[in-house]
Amino acid sequence: MNIARLAFLTLLARPLAMFLTGADVIGREHLPKAGPAIIAANHTSHVDTLLLLTIFPAKCMSRLRPVAAADYFLRGPIIGWFSRTLVGIVPVVRTAGNHEDVLAPARQALMDGDIVIIFPEGTRGPGNDELAPLKSGVARLAAAFPDAPVTPVWLEGAGRVLPKGALLPAPMNCTVLVGEPIHWTGEKTVFLDALRASLDELRKSAPPQRWLAERPADPPPTSGGAAPSAP
Amino acid sequence: MSAMSSLHLQLLGHALPPIAWPLVWGLAGVLALLTLGAIAAIVLPLVRRGHDYTNLRQRVISWWVMVALLSVALGLGWQATLVLFAVISFIALREFLSLAPAHREDRLIILASYAVVPISYWWIAVNEYGIYLVFIPVWVFLITPFLMAVIGQTRNYLQRAASFHWGEVACVYAIGFIVFLMRTPANLPMPAGPAGLVFLLLVATEANDVAQYCWGKLFGRHKIMPTVSPNKTWEGFIGGWVTTAALIWVIGPIFAPLAGLNLAIMAITLPLAGFAGDVTLSAVKRDIGVKDTSRLIPGHGGILDRIDSLTFTAPLYFHLMTFFALHR
Image (cartoon, rainbow over all chains, first blue to last red; front, side, top):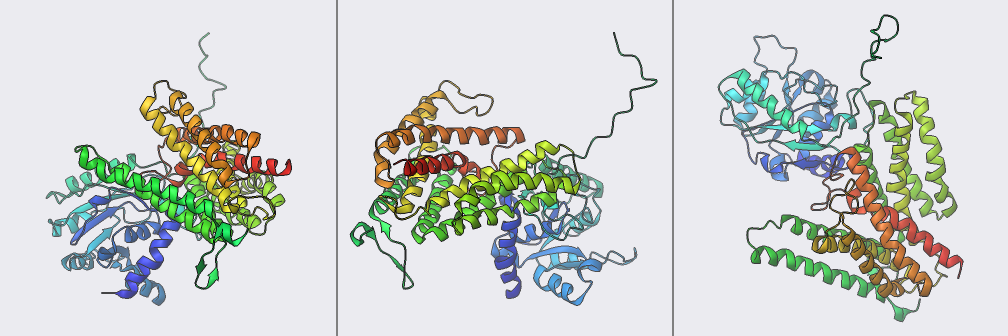
């Protein structure tokens, strides 16, 4: 196994995750203990991957494979080496045409008995407690491996530590909420609805590690032709 | 301090600060209590099957870890104690800033707020008591709202500025006084050295928490602050007060230069401050809508849950001690 990766994850990534987020985990018992398995999580920040890679026990760490966009994570030789060797990504070609099988590397990883981490929203969202529409890739993976459990994970707070576009991370507590695994149901929309419902349920039970809501829309002006108030 | 009155240890050939014998016996007493707790956590599940003692077990294990960390730090001297409490302040502040209501634009201020921890503890390291006293209450108090104004976001401005400052004072300023006790000049009379002063503060504060809890569990009938802390009762408050006051009365003179009226004042006021700190942080948590500030310490919750009473007892203890020393 890859000693450099294990050393990176346990000696560097895990202390960094503790420092930046506190790395609280609720429902740790639901995490898969072996592959093939799929982790489906919401996505707001690179801190998501940092958290998911470091909450597993060391003996599982070498099995963790985050699915990541090839155009972003393999864009240069250094970041490419970092992504492949230390983070252990499964590259997905976002720009591929419809005829190409973009999920082949992820299926291969599951075939090898790995735990594949996938962000079904497809990309990092605005990070204020919203879940974008889920893409169908996770359903196709689950359909290809109907015995592999799909564990829903809600990551609360990571979007505040390092939002999209920010350079410096700000330490703020995050919570990883792990739900009960679901399985392929034989039908894509039913499966995606179940996954979404489970993620929503986890989101509702998360501690309020989120920004205050944006200012509500200004009320319509009441002067002029407004209805007269009751006497 | 003569060689007879203290324990001299060495680490890798370096002499550690001498440890006064009362402190050795005090730690032995704490370890004896922890051992009783461990026995209870092992025996109770065997005797009373069907009850879930997971929380008790977690609490006891966490206490062992906390006592081990504090004992090692106090034994190594003021530098190690400073590092330990700086880390505690950082984690407490992170817990607070993560739960306090904040807007997206506050992220830069939150990032800047962490700089207060190393700067504030730096004044302790260089023994600048005068600067320490005003740094957070005056300068951080003035500069934080100014930075918020520079960023140009004025939504809920006063509430947010107040909440940032509340966090800095409770998590950093108040806790720093514990470390400043370790810097007490050696020419002042201290029966168990500077570490003895810290030991008495920590033991009395935690004993008060535990005593209040036990009296409340056993005899609690009349709620004392139902809108803030529904589980707190008059019986727990008064029982804890009397128990802790008696404890300070008995062991206070062993660890700190306390006697007579000074000892009585400390014994009466410290348990009140502990209760006040506990209730005040409960009000903050109730406002935010959480029970625990994090899950860092198994069985206890977050660091802020554990040090809530200390945020009040540490400044009171420090200032009473300073007052008594100046008015001998």
